[in-house]
Image 1 (cartoon, helix red, strand yellow):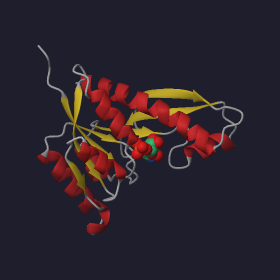
Image 2 (cartoon, protein in one colour; image 1 turned 135 degrees about the vertical axis):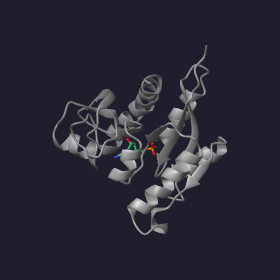
Image 3 (cartoon, helix red, strand yellow; image 1 turned 120 degrees about the horizontal axis):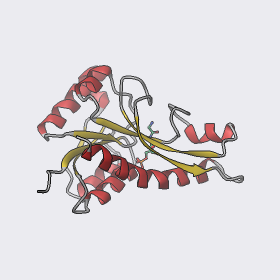
Length: 193
Ligand code: GAR
């Protein structure tokens, strides 16, 4: 008997190309998850328009409308619960989540990060890999815990750093890898329990 698909919310702050990759993968009949909701902390995020065009409920919850991060994340939590969300995918969500929110979703939040963690948590990962002279770089999907970019790794993908790379060429190569990696990692997580 077919098991029910996991109900996914994607949280974004911008372009949403990883959300698009997840949504496209999830259109396969045997994919174990379905994108049921897009939330952005930025009302003008391009990814929200894409979600709407795909008939995915797309909601802006702007941090500036709340007194503090806790109140903002309580509002996000409420919407997630209203939509019966089971797993959350952070996809370019550029605000650090607080402990209270993460604690309400233990093991249920995935994040994609543009480096081979534990190398280069935080920002400017591609420039840091170039500056370090790394021969390999890549991306990681991990489970979100209270510590920034430090939760258990679900899956990683490596890409080579080429001799004439600059930030733009390396970013593009990693992003292409992200679009393959995130759907694979989400499928693993969705089948996991
Ligand atoms: C992606 O490269 C993602 O790995 C990165 O932001 C980009 C979002 O692109 N995330 C982080 O840096 C998180 N710290 P997208 O909006 O096109 O998916």
